[in-house]
Length: 300
Image (cartoon, rainbow, N blue to C red):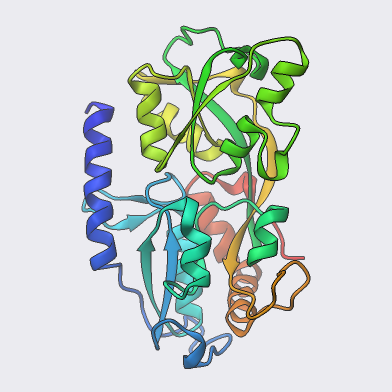
């Protein structure tokens, strides 16, 4: 199947998801919920609404029937299950996903979101995974992108609002020290950064030849190259750059800066559910299923 066809199926499935998210058992596997969330603290009583930017495989994706799947989906579903809640995934645009959760569209974010200084000011972030960044190029690496600095003077694509876009452009936590700025400091041409609204749009920029690399979290980059070796390959020698923790995002209440704010009732309950998953081995089992056990973390 051609990748263009795959992307069209993915985008169609994302429309369906908003209307009818997956169902989960309302009972905790241990008989009683590991924590209680007041109904008034939830967007919808009896449900845990999770903002997720689909697709970003293997962390969030759709199966052949159009149902949500992936590591993040299973972690989110298990958290809801242990809190005695039904789960619903709300497909969101990553660049506005924080506004979605702080605006009450959903209760939490589970969407391969790196923990950054800027994001911690806006929401609480509970660490649950670790990943880095990688570059994907076309099969055969026709532009000879063997190191990150080989991108100087060339074009690269990334999804808007992501750490990858910040790293390439020198924005957010990478202000003044992005890869393009490193090129200029070395006397080379800056990188032309193409920022796309959705991750699939950024990948399409590579496939259409408008850029020489697509940048994504390392598990996602690896997924595409393994699933479609006839189309894609890892660039820059497969280097994993800028490893960082990913966090479950939760509104911190009325605080203007969430950096040192205590967890909200929702955040505390989610953290308790995640801790119980780590303690009984369910967390590692989920990561292992998706070949992501190397990104396992422990709660602080």
